[in-house]
Image (cartoon, rainbow, N blue to C red):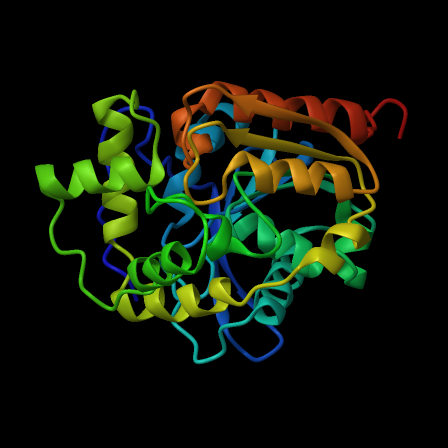
Length: 307
């Protein structure tokens, strides 16, 4: 289980949940789940990305929990969810189904937001019965469905076999990340964030990413390398918004544009100038606002008087 190196104060300090529970996936894997906000409020489910945790969504949770029931969970091997030998797109889909079934009432719908690998989780689950029963709308942040290593621009050379080979070695490295030092922050900002990211944003991302165990980081890098979820995009039939930063090196805008073109019901794509891969931290107001808009447009709230 990962070390929880969290920011203690400020907008990226994780708020305390109203309650916690363990969702059990199809293979018995246990997933740490947090629930924030009032019972009966419109539901939002947050799926984080590779090497992250529920702490990644701190800014969204803090703002949304005032009038939404926010459900955030740690992907297997991340945060407080124990590691599992099963690492695959199917496992991601199983896990999301388990969280939905453990936290939502029969027939209850939610807006589901996924960042990076969390967005891939949504694509992997798009045809699953539980997903279709509970998903009212989706937000895909900084993500892609296939050719992830080949499309990445982390290595600043022309696209082709040499760049793909180098990118695969970097992203799949087994080396420990070590403590959060000034050099580590600079490397992380280059690879995952826009050049203008504020120091407190970089610090929050560094603490979260460095907390991920290297074995977990490596295992999931192998899954992402071979991932092909183009079919899952075509099965994602609910209203779906897409957000990407123009400076995203891990899942560049070309990936987001391909998603928007393939989605059956894309409500729009937003490209954020100068923002990198960590959109929920780099552009928290925009991401939170987009989730709110999806809730307002696609979740019908029944008042006690009309019930």
